[in-house]
Image: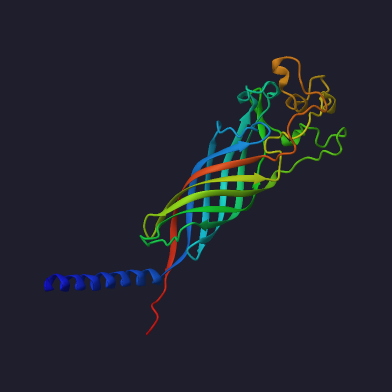
Length: 287
């Protein structure tokens, strides 16, 4: 019995000493931040996809730097590339939208700053605090330039003013820019594999301040706003502002609803993330 008690006492002190040494080593490691990459899918929501259907995902990829302040809060700077696009051919449930026959694609280049807020204590290298879900939100800016295909040719839509932007007939409709603000809001989880590497997954929705990611927002300008070419043929802008002609009589009467201007466009990204910790070593304090 005495031998068992002595063995237990020795084990207790050895375990305690190892634990103390382990946490001493952790205390001497300074987490300077992490750099990482992300890869996943993006999806657009807007005038061509008002029901938020997730049936046309496209590629998304990013780079980021994250600096952790304490064990629960981090600041992240990220850059993303994504593809967005949609077409009225997927809107068969709505006769008007399907007949409208509009489509677009665009590349997105995004730069954002976000705050990450952990639910649990997160300490890279500590096996007891190596996992946490988190919420994230912030602000960013992105570049977009919608285009469509007509007779096999790629055509950028913004310069055409398909809703009468820049036309004398609609002096109040100004051309939209190629830059806009986004407001990322989402959730994720991250797991620290070891002292050097982390993995994670997150879904982040981007509200924006533009309704022209898809080149659709308000009402039809009408054929009269797009003078014919010298040879009498319709201009490219006049053709692409109302593509319902493929189904018969065009529906693009001036003033008729083309989009829904009271709701801005948005997009979401779902990504797997891999990051690498940047650390330095703090010298032990002299006693």
